[in-house]
Amino acid sequence: MVSYSLYATILFSLLQLSISTPQYVTPPLPILPVPSYSQLKWQQREIIMFLHFGVNTFTDSEWGTGYEDPAIFNPTGLNAAQWIETAVETGVSLVILTAKHHDGFCLWPSKYTNQSVIGSPWENGHGDVIRELVKAAEPRGVDVGLYLSPWDRHDQRYGHNQEYNEYYLAQLQELLNNYGNVREIWFDGAKGANATNMSYYFNDWIAMVRELQSSINIFSNAGPDVRWVGDENGFAGETCWSTVNRTSLSIGDGINIDYLNTGDPKGTDWLPAECDVSIRPGWFWHKSESPKKLSKLLEIYYNSVGRNCLLLLNVPPNTTGLISGGDVQRLREFRSAIDTIFGTNLAEKWYVNASSQRGGKEGGFGPENVLDTDHLWTYWAPRDDQDEDYWIEFHGTDDGVSFNVVRIQEAIGLGQRIKRHEIYVDGDLIANGTIVGYKKLHRLKMGVVHGYSVKIRITESRGVPLHLMIFFNSSQNPLSSSQSPSSVSLSPNDDKSLISPPSSTTPPPKSFELLHHQQHHGHQIPNQLFLLRCPHRRR
Image 1 (cartoon, one colour):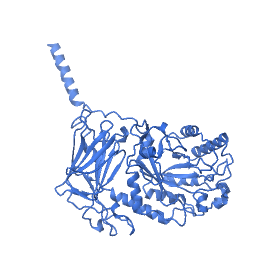
Image 2 (cartoon, one colour):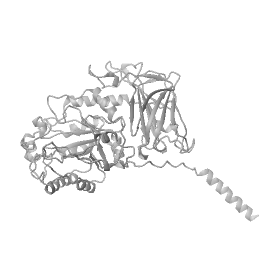
Image 3 (tube, rainbow, N blue to C red):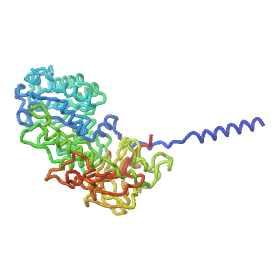
Image 4 (cartoon, helix red, strand yellow):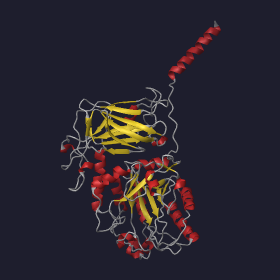
């Protein structure tokens, strides 16, 4: 009798334990390579800002000669707080300053050269532009990066390998020891065709950077953290993998532009692309130049951020030491347009289902994850044993929805997976593409479409695809201009197809998200609809 009671007690306890302890489904294995913490944070910035500033600003040139008198540098109204305020208004959280450009002039009082602010009448030779930038950036939560040109047309040590590399490393130590946390350092191999022959000790430079700043991202043609996209137009390849083989790249000469522009699906290194472009025709400020049209900036955004890259937008301060008013206004319009286009997700209130889900209905990887606010670590994951017909589908209201932009995102924290995908509306193919990565934006070639269901089909992937988010931009039957956002305007020559009209529908049902892009100043601004998301369980 005693043994039977003991057996019953143990059995009952085990049963209670099995009921009270949920069996969580584990996340899928990553597909290597995966990004580092600092690379993930960098990618999420989406837009960062370059500040080209120096003696070229005062000589109306792009590449200085190295013979400039430091006394010409005199920005009497320099206000780094205005630069940072402009960055904040643009939604930028990292600004990169040209600490030294090819002319060799240094924006800080380096003890290793007199070709610097020491010889400038600005602040009676006691000024420090980098210090001003850091002081302005910190209270606003903006990070700082620096560009230190390897090519130096002024210093006499240039061309003498050991002496110049020692000089360059000494200046790196000044910058990385004295100005707090630096989040990105820019190396490049740019130099004139007739420049003195010089070997840069890049491996030594990178090792020194790593020693002094553990969380920094290092940019160059070959990384090791961020790669150049291969052009200065702000455009990535239509296919642009975050993965490459770094052994196929080199800093400086022998650049494989096509490889930089597209990446490599078989790459063993995570090395995402940065798209650099200037808001003006030149990189330094010139009185004769004006900022790009809003439509052009939006086109750049779609072809950089919308192609799995980060946009590095150059905004050069003028001779007064301020960002010009026309540039500031254009950046406000740019930010307002992006917020308007992508501000509200119409997909949130739609019903969503999928081909399968990892761990079943209670596994934590259902398609509803694509509609939450975590754009990195919650996602829809299909079963490992499913065949390769992976899809996720959204069903809307009886009135349907009109849209012309679709945004798709992957959970890149577990690797980049999707190779090819297709988009269907009511069973009809409306768009297709290759990679997705952090973000893919489709502007539909046929313009606005109207439908009641939207399906994303993954036709080829590296392992099981993990979807993070989907978004639609709808555009039809514009809403009242009295409901519109307050600061989006288009010039008469701007392309209105980039900011298209919104749709007016009855409130959509649960589980989808549509964006209402309203009329503003007589211009039609589109509604949007988010759709897809992938990797990680709900937290």
